[in-house]
Length: 102
Image 1 (tube, rainbow, N blue to C red):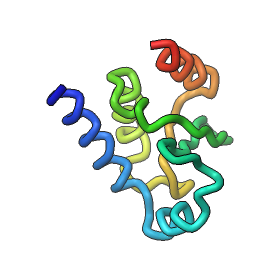
Image 2 (cartoon, rainbow, N blue to C red):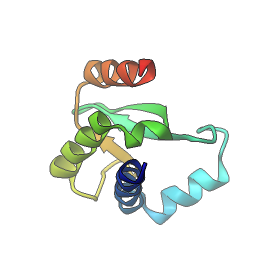
Image 3 (tube, rainbow, N blue to C red):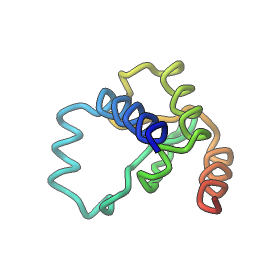
């Protein structure tokens, strides 16, 4: 259990570094866009599509690998203002489907 919490804390730190104060304020003021317990993520290379996923996915090792890839590709200065994942939409949908079943 301690290992899972450490993974979640690591993911949370990455997310905190990626979100600008302006975006955090907008999300806080407009909670209708993202349900409680979820997070909005931009996915794609070039055109980016917005997905809303459960926060619980952030703790999964497969998703952690995806976050590490995003960090290598974009660093912590995301052009969309939110978390941006540099993978194909098909891969992301496949990954989230796998996480949904587990």
